[in-house]
Amino acid sequence: MTAPPPIRCTGLSRWYGEVQGLSDLSLEVTPGIVGLLGPNGSGKTTLMRLLTGLIRPTRGRVELFGRRAGPGAWRLFRRIGYAPGDDVHFELESGRDFLVLLARLHGESASGARAAAERALAAVGMTELAGKRLREMSKGMRQRIKVAQALLHEPELLLLDEPLNGMDPLSRRQVMDLVREHGRRGGTVLFASHILHEVESITDRVILLHHGRLLAEGRLAEIRDLLDRKPRRVTLQGASPEAVRRLAAAALQSNLVSGLEFEGEDGLHLATRRLGPLLDAIQTWGEQGDVRALTMADENLEAVFDLLVGGEG
Image 1 (cartoon, rainbow, N blue to C red):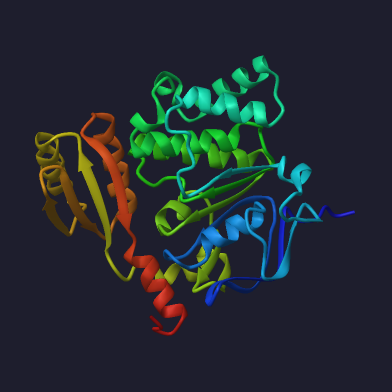
Image 2 (spheres, rainbow, N blue to C red):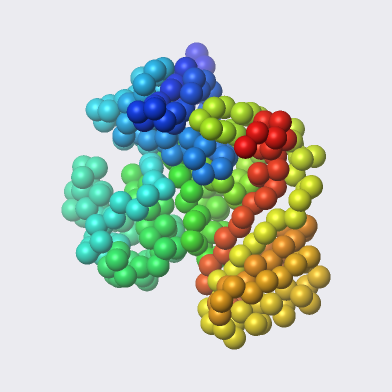
């Protein structure tokens, strides 16, 4: 007998008063890595919250591993790891103590909780920094703690809501490697992002949401001819003003950028039509300690959505 898919949504809708979060969404997610793509406000976080039972659907149903999901389905949710988009930390706790507490709530013994916390911290490269209080951590560190708590109990299904926001290049690569490894081991990952390249780097299976509706799903290869019509924009935060100047000089010498603009003392905007090679170069610069954070305003994603919806706003 064929196993049921890890995720199945049927006629799923969610309203917030008169505001529509999701509308009549039907889809299946089979094992492996699937990118959940859409601009901010497209319904990605609403779907994640419905899948984790944090909110109830207005209409329709969610099934996880063939069983109906909803608030209170605790045994089912033990098979899921969730890294929310919002910060939900206990600010006065250290990263390590926060993870130990969550592992204890999951049912681990004191020693088992400590062991699980250390495994998760090592997986996201936070072992040496986990003694810091959460309120003292940078955005990127807090993001890694969220990914670590999703990994604590070695779940079958990972739900990651914009996990790479604010991370430096090295941390991004480490988390993406974790996602790829989870998929290779037969697990399932639903990876939500508004950055096309993030998803493109780890999978070619995508779900596109727009204004709470399913716009498209399938392989990225099916829309690949739409991806290179506009330059992509990358923003770097330098470790210092001197680092920004070094980054600007390296970018110009690389011949990988079509435009460059400074923002304040530590910001640098780069435009490129060769995103992959540029990100490889930024990885090298990051290893030298000059890059504090990287973000991308993915104009190509907006172009794809504009084309798919026929120019709707």
